[in-house]
Image 1: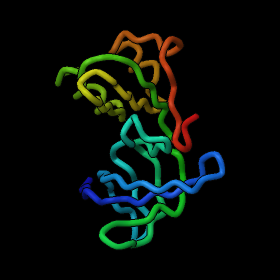
Image 2: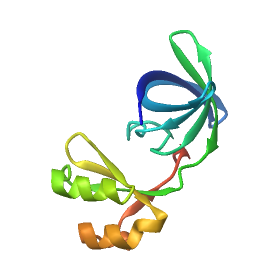
Image 3: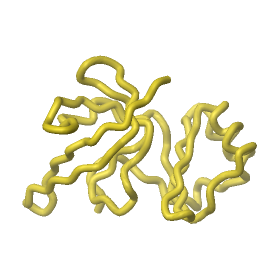
Length: 140
């Protein structure tokens, strides 16, 4: 899996107002206009793109414009306060097809394949019912 960092231009409507922002993301190109997102938006953004989303893109200036989220990630995404995972746990999570990101050293976003949820629960000793699940798109 070869990834590239690309600047994405995102436009959306919030409370009747057109909003624009840019952010750099790690992408894995599927074809000329389609890419798989390999990291999530900054947790402070109003519009989130999440690890595993498939995006339709078109060239724009020094980056790409997001046309659409073609397919939302087939993972479940949870956010909670925790430090980065140690390497042995990270390696096991990756073997299960999952991933994680940590913003500001304490805000964990855990990406869990639906098929591996039970294994991840055992690996990390988590109760997913107590965690906040997050979704792509406009945040409330």
